[in-house]
Every structure is written in structure tokens, then in C-alpha cells.
Amino acid sequence: MDAETHRSGEHRGARWRKRGLLVVAWLLLVSVGQSVMFWQVERFAMKAYRIPSSNMEPTLHCPRPASGCEADTADRILVSRLAPSWTPSRGDIVAFRAPESARLKCGAGGTFVKRIIGLPGEQVSLRLRRGAAFVYIDGEQLDEPYIENDRRDIGPEETFRVPEGQYFVMGDNRSQSCDSRVFGTVPRGSLIGPVVAVHWPLDRMGLQ
Image (tube, rainbow, N blue to C red; front, side, top):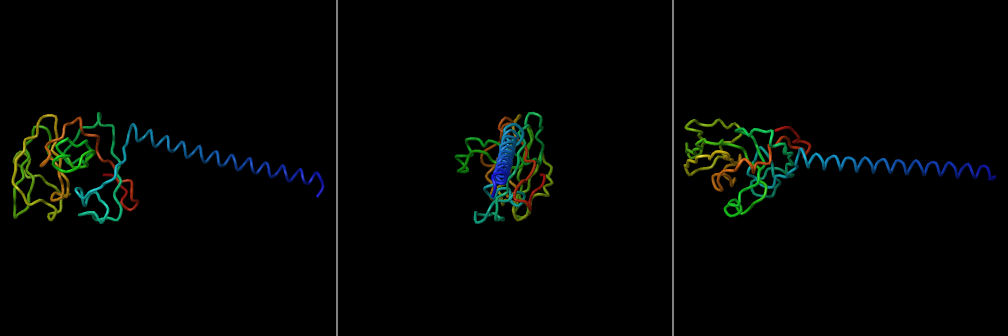
């Protein structure tokens, strides 16, 4: 091999090494950019949570073999953090900071996910029909298509008055949900935001 051919080979090798380094640098930049973007989105707009228990089955799944769970993988949800511009409505599935009474009465604290049932100023009543508890709001039975009859609790009959500025929340799996029936109502300031989507696993992805 003459000197010119050798120099040419070295030049091509250096060029390919340079291209390889550029590709690696670009991939790192994209990865860092995506991480920063996701962090900013999570910080200001959305927060991701994992469903650990069966209180919202079958609307939101938790992983077997935990009691009452129906899936192999926990649902991972996105919660909107733009709460100041959101007006909570009956039927919204929400994430909220559980009151201290929940830690004492439910054996758990932190962030809970439940459905808003009663609005400020309303009377929420639980009445038994054929051994299952149905919800009444100000004397009118609440239509709850998201509740399966075999997941309704069996009592007792109770009536609650929701204070102004607070919300009455319940899980969809009533017989396994520790909720406002136990720890009381949730102040508006404790609501983090509504659940807007399931983002994992792929076969259950979708808006709520």
C-alpha cells in the first residue's frame, strides 16, 4: 500500500468516526430534550400516577395478585395539573391529597384516585335496595352506569351533608373502597386535578 492510499484510508476512517460521534451526540441531545420536555410537561401540565389498589376496578385496573385486581399490569394515568382553570363536576375521576383521617382510618395516605359523587352543599344518601347500596343526591337516585351491581356495597344506610368548598368522593369498586364515607369530604384545595387519560399499558390507552 502506497503512502497516498494509506492517507486516504485514514481520512475515510476519521470521517466515519466523526459521523459516528455526531450521530451519538444527536441521539443524546434528542434523549435529553425529550426528558426535559417530559419533566416540564409533568411539572406544569400533567402528572403521572400508578393505580395500586382495586378501589376503582373495573374502570382503572391494578395488578394481580393484589386483592380484587383484574389485570397483570397496573394502569398508569395522566392527571391534569391545570386545576385552577378546572371546575370539578360530578362523575369526574380525580387525584387528590388524602386528608390525615384517611391515614388513620384507611391505613394509607398520600395521593388517592376516586370519583366525585357529591358537590358542595348537596346531601348524599346511601339507601339499600335488595341488599345493595345506591346513591341518592338531594333525594334523587344517582344514575351510575360505571358501577357494576356486584361491586356495590351492602350498607349501612347513611346520609352526609357536603360542606361548601368540599367534595364527596367514592371509588367505583364500592365494597373495597375507603372513601368519603370513611374519611370525610375533600376540600377543593386538596384536589390535584382530573384524570384525563390512561397512558399505559398500550392495550388500555385512552381518554377518560
